[in-house]
Amino acid sequence: MSAQHIHILYIDDEIHNLNAFKASFRRLYNVVTATSAEEAEKLLAEQEFHIIISDQRMPKTTGIEFFESILERYPEPIRMLLTGYADINAVVDAINKGQVYKYFSKPWNEEELKHNIDKAYEVYALRKENKELTAKLLDVNQKLEFLVRQKLIS
Figure 1 (cartoon, rainbow, N blue to C red):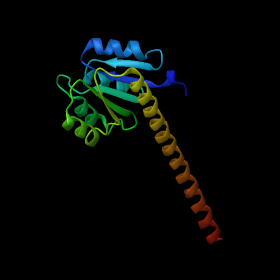
Figure 2: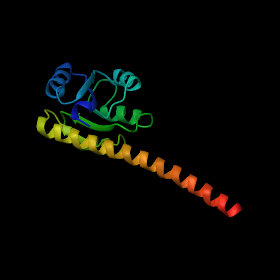
Figure 3: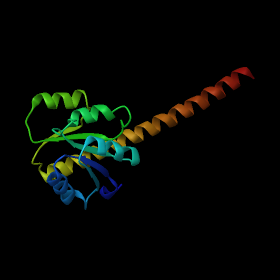
Figure 4: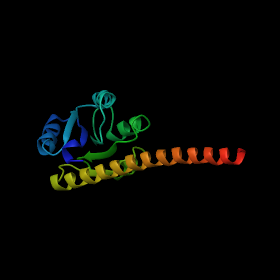
């Protein structure tokens, strides 16, 4: 899949960060932005995203709280956290509660972020392929068990 087909949702309450992210990455990826967790939830209900990147410190909901709240309904997208603050507790919570793939500091390094978005998509694609292969394997196993039982009966 080409990078342009990678769908990213970026959530940040600061408009200039959303604009900077979109300006940096819109030619490489399909980028959709949201200014709040509520807006992001609506977007998640409407379309599929491969990667979700959220700012940590936002009014009402932190990035970690947002990830934790969507984890059960949207487990597939790879989650990444951006923050302007060095907070080790936030990093630990991000990994443990929100199952965050990577944590980045603001201002972000464009090349590093691009590299990690590409790697995150690889993880997404591998997980999806693994899920599909597991489903196929279970189906084949069921058919094989049925055939074995038929043979034992006859």
